[in-house]
Image (cartoon, rainbow, N blue to C red; front, side, top):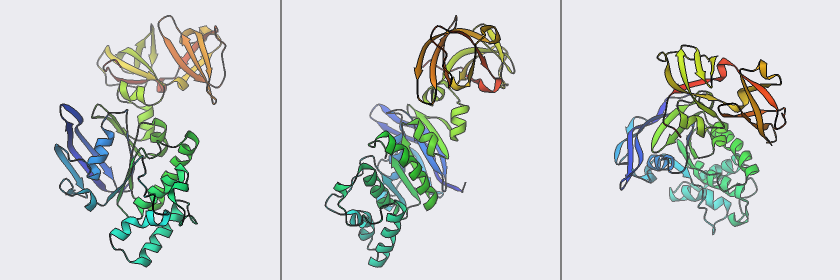
Amino acid sequence: MGKNLIELKNLTKRYGDMTAVDSINLTIKENEFVTLLGPSGCGKTTTLRMIGGFEDPDEGQILFEGKLLNPIPAYKRNINTVFQRYALFTHMNVFENIAFGLRIKKIPKNEIERRVKRMLKLVDLEGFEKRNVDSLSGGQQQRVAIARALVNEPKVLLLDEPLGALDLKLRKEMQIELLDMQRSVGITFIYVTHDQEEALTMSDTVVVMNKGLIQQVGTPQDIYNEPLNRFVADFIGESNIIEAIMPEDYKVAFDDVVLDCVDKGFAKNEPVDIVIRPEDIRIVTNPDDGMIKGTVKSVIFKGVHYEMIIESDIREYMVHRTMMFPVGSYVGMNIQPCDIQVMKRGEPL
């Protein structure tokens, strides 16, 4: 990863009595694909808009290559934005839409031709130059919007839920295409979404936000496998989140069992939260061979796996397995030490 490109320092934005972004700190590197992920109202789009210059922070600094960005208007920042509503010019064809920003800058005609053709090739729209944008599909319109932003050769591209209007199949295809584009042009992408799969699929770094605060920053693998708190564990994928006790290092007690884990550094008998992903619970047909015993309460076929709810004497566990166990089956459940993630005890969700 490259050097630091954007730094947010104690960045805060308020709307009346509501704090949309609450004194966040974040460093974004050159050529990095960063996703701001969280539920509606978490502050992710407000953060993006402050970086782009569309909102002024109430407190804090935005640094770009070490220089203060706050006083610089949006049109003078080396940053372009793609919005969920692509805001294409319907009275212009594809070529003119992409060339619009270059014409405003009075770029020479031959240079405009070169850059637009390069962008059309990048977004796989060669031969569409004269097409009216209204005649394009949603995915093609999105490509035009991205090409229009990239043709200006910004150092940063901001993307505010650009796939939200697309159907599921096209959205999945465009996730891969966007990642390929980012690698091809070699610039920083800052992407906003509430879709966990998008974040995990495309990002070098995921920034999980909630209530104006950053909850965790890490690689997709870190965020999924090592959530720092109950919110992250619950928001990213399916989880069994259980209140437990750490009687000592490498031991965790819950539901009348004491299991080995790989965590240490907690106080003796400290209350903790643990996360067990549904795919990490193994089912055995002989209940006596299981660490925890329970009865299969429901089975739902999800395509790549079965989702089963197994009820023990104390709680229900969600389990994902490729083999189905019929409702009413009395089974055992086993969990490997490395599949138990221990966290500091947090507020109930």
